[in-house]
Amino acid sequence: MIRALVLLATIIVLGAPSALLLIPWAAVTGNVLPLYKATLAIVRIGYRLIGIHVVVTGLENVPPNTACIFMANHVSNLDPPALLPRIPGRTSAFIKSSLMKIPVFGWGLKLGEFVPVSRDGSIAGAQESVAAARRVLEKGIHITSFVEGTRSPDGRLLPFKKGPFYLAMQTGAPCIPVSIYGTEALMAKGSLRIRPGTAHVVFHAPIYPASFATREELLEAVRAAIASGLPAWMRD
Image (cartoon, rainbow, N blue to C red; front, side):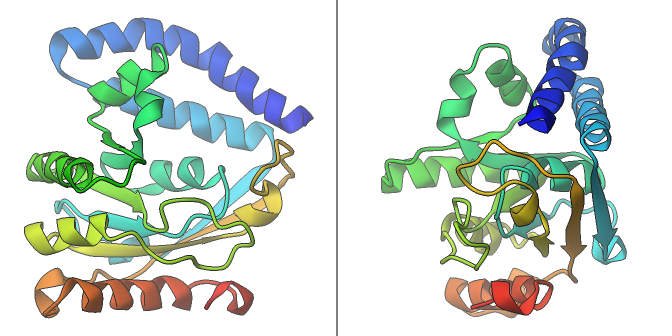
């Protein structure tokens, strides 16, 4: 619990002045990069303070100067802060629409062009999210998706959501499968306790949607790639 409080305090102490300065700057100038970089730097500092070390492999697999769709598994609330700072360039992400309603934080997400996803399961809502993500990709910004849609309760892969694969088939953007493990032991689902330790982030070779006849075939290829980077017990 103490580490969770340390992480929260770090975000508040360093994040508040950054937000006060850089959110208005981004709103006035349209340049969100200083805010984006400051946020990622604060996350890195917080992880160091609470004893979490992130080991990254496979970054050489990410094609340079290309907007990609990063597709990762999800086992802990510690996953996004472990992954996003390690993605080369700037990324947006699919996020719960409720996060957009948080004062200040939600405004920062909007400026960063993060893509809200409604949990009502409506077709119209899903189409709207995919269309918004497509506009982001067309600007040369990556999209990151935790393709299970929620955290796995036991670390094992859950069924994947279809939305990111609709986006991939529509845009042809390279899909970068990402395997995350170790975080499930550092902060379990439903717990506020954080343990020190090592989180692993594995970037796999790009998978190109044009190589597949159907969305389902693409999904299975991405799932196989993610599973290949996980410990045996976390696979299907």
